[in-house]
Image (cartoon, rainbow, N blue to C red; front, side, top):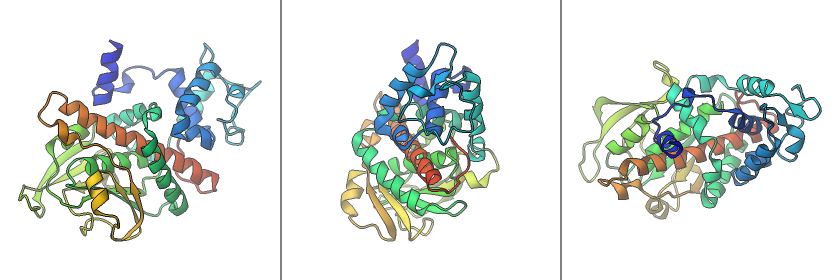
Length: 334
């Protein structure tokens, strides 16, 4: 039963609103919001969870005095901490109060899946964690509240990983109160958005609908439909994008000053320089295409979606913490 529940959550089939997330998860979110830089480093996620397990009492209260090095004392000085302890009710109140307005504009199922992914930052492997750290540094340096900051996710065909990564990046930016950070997708040899990519995004509540229009076809001459991808609530144009397979230099994408995330090995090798990019980050992921037509096809697309999603969420969480420490104010978030 437990394993089937976890599998269903990973596929996006179970809503976290079906039951209370519990005191441990709320305390984890509390530390992610009010924690130190060490607490928001995915490399320390297991240590944080271990410390939380020891600091959490049976009634859901938290002995913050047992979280030395992980709780920012200045960040919680406005909270009612008595004898080094904060009650379960106050933890919930603090977590709820810190939710940014942009997170409330996410589609409910999308938000619930992002909630779930924030509990699994320990699953980010070291190469991606280090690559994510480079992106965190760039965002913290260049972020200005209310000003657009662009990222292009690049793979070869712009059919799978780049579209999954860009969508999960946009979700993560809105989740952590920085929707002005916008993710786009592109390729080096574009073809068409793969239907399996569409299925993987729909499974977590993202609305993906064909517009009826088609863009220029690649060398394969495969039909290249344009999709409207919406991660926000209906009629919220700020939380949607038009996606189709395109070269990363396509006029639909930013032309300069963006960060380029190279999420496949071939594109990474083919483009040692990315025209117009202010930052180029190598973070290749295995292509779920290898599983097409097999029994594990859906699970592997979901796996890749979530691998990229939890990295994007971890990046935004760290960037928010860094930006806040530097005095800027993204929307309130945990």
